[in-house]
Length: 118
Length: 112
Image 1 (cartoon, rainbow over the protein chains, first blue to last red):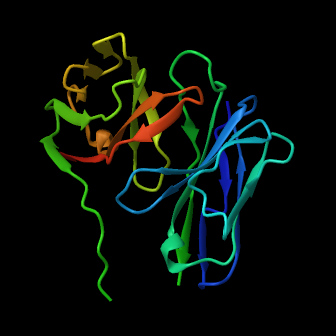
Image 2 (image 1 turned 30 degrees about the vertical axis):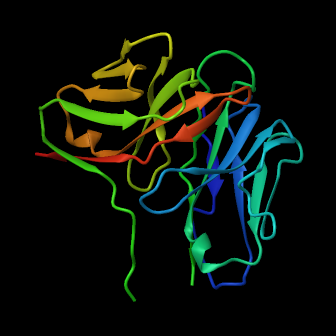
């Protein structure tokens, strides 16, 4: 099966500019996640969608970050305006299991989009 | 300017040796645990998971041990190979939305 697709792989912008990242999850995966991973740290969940609804966005800086998953498939994460501390890898992941179902919720990750803010 | 970064714990092993990567978890209510491997420039990749009602699970060249008494998880890699060089993360899952809580990660370096 095809994996999680993300684009662009790399993006360099200046602070206060905007940027958008795109993710196409594995076909049939109901749940989609956006994570931020700063160098040397574990992934930090920004937002979790189940189909096209938001399950958890408690750690999303909503004054500058937004995300949508309009048709329950592809998703876009936007940052506007960017700050220096937003430099990180933005990982998209998807999983088959919905919330509440038994068993481990195994996420499949894309390769990530590396953002550098100058 | 000078950059300051978080220094990951690092484990250095010789090719062919066994590796043991440890993880302390925080939530006694977590009902499953997952190990992920992250190679440079890639996203985390699932290795193996274990339910909280188990204390051991084996995969191909990997074994995960769970000690709920001391909230400790370990990943054992047999006959470590250069391709095993990566950062390894443990994650614990709990709650109705199956939210994962990620550990800090351990960098494994395999010397030829």
